[in-house]
Amino acid sequence: MRLGLRYLILKIQCLVATEDGQDMVEYCLIAALIATACVASTNAFARLLLGSFTSISNTFDLYV
Figure (cartoon, rainbow, N blue to C red):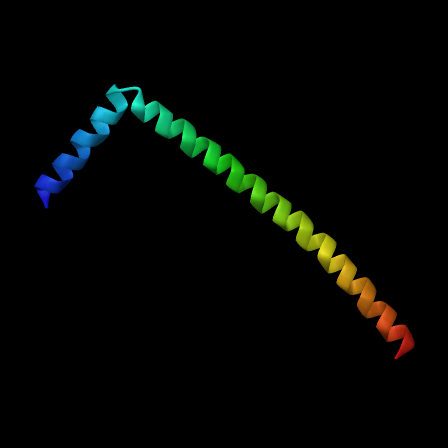
């Protein structure tokens, strides 16, 4: 177990020491930004959809 942890720490140190780790961090930041944009747009779309269904429901209530 300790050997695995030591190996993981060494790998992280190697990533920090090389520029390859910086690329990975940049990709993770881009992925986080895209995920945040998706969540924000999904929430806006959900509010729009809720308004549309509420309008349809109110229209049905008038005629039924």
